[in-house]
Image (cartoon, rainbow, N blue to C red; front, side, top):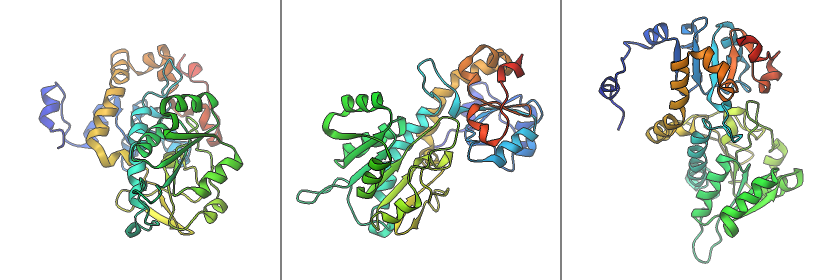
Length: 327
């Protein structure tokens, strides 16, 4: 069930006649997906856009936003007082849970997989699941996979995080320190690999080489949740919900760039719960005043009036100090 226009008007909102009218009349535009090609010409100089941006793997979009002389704040780099990414977390939770569902489907023979049931049955072993990255996506994926009794291994380079996962799950999962040898070992041994590696604001590290994919068992599956940041497998490329998978060397790849969009109602409420306080701050104080006074919102600033402002975007061009730009 969708959210009706009358629900918005009852809350005091006005419903625009068209997207063009909304962009024309708004100082701050809040959305979910990065600005689409048809939206870019509507962005006015000085207008603020608050959304997921994922600019590191998309230099063309970065250049377009620079050219529009706008203010672009990315959900995925807004921080909190605990060192977390509070606006990335809800969609990461959704994507992590969905990764197991998508991987289970892709492992079925009609979808190109090896015909393996994740949880197995009595007398037949369960699937082996390797989760690359123990952050929010990886933790959610591990929880789901362990819940259906797959054999789950989480690999990460953050030892305190691995200890926390061990305390949380006990023997339901295995934790392994990630290096070249252990990643290769567990990827080659896995029936399902879930790629959830993240470096905030920059491109995902390529943990799975093309040569490693070539050595995987035919019918095994990679769900590359990192695809929004370029993907953690060299063989990954973006796909859609309508055509979600492809095969390389007999390995099924699921690389949908907007996984939470398939469960849009759940995702809408999960994301709005997290973003609403930040949207209100931007609206109440004004965009530039909010950025000047809130270091966590400032961390979300990716583009400011013709300047790149997030250090993770340095490979795309010179990065300016946002504090100097805001004065």
